[in-house]
Length: 269
Image (tube, rainbow, N blue to C red):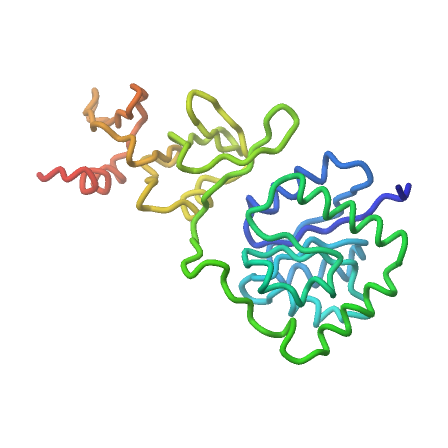
């Protein structure tokens, strides 16, 4: 195994996806995370300023796609690249000859680890020169990397289906359908799932936007509940309200969000 550390930049417009990649890499020997970017514009700036050895690069991002990032940087100076995509293997076969590797979401920890090890080995054996020549060749080929990928499924969901959490030193993925409710805890969000609690560093606003509103509702500035667990709405002392969930848990409901919850429950005034 090469002894040198590989300086890595992570680029993905989804905060949870970035966090998951960073968490896995942080436990790998030889990986040094030098930065993360949330869009293509940031990616271009950070590649130029940080000069990483390896980039985990999301293919589909608003504003500037992963391929557009490569074109703007220039294949002749682009770091080794692992493309990350929500599209199937057939759709990204052109990237396979150009990139060190690619990851198709959702991927497991072992797949990410093997992609990193493959990149580290190829950097040591081939060097960036040969990898850049392959990237340049595929980008100059009509109808390959410039083509828009085809979705792996006709209706790729836009909302989160799983959330990465750290458990006992390992990053695991929890299906959102197993989350009972989410509580804000300072800069963290506390996920309650089947009697267990998991902390992730994510804003409630971001989670609210990324969770399917048909399944989850933010009932308080610091609370999100899974709607199919809601059993009843209780009025407490002082005009405050609480929602009771299956299993007996009760959580606060703010006055500003009570109307929306009552409409969902079919309560008429």
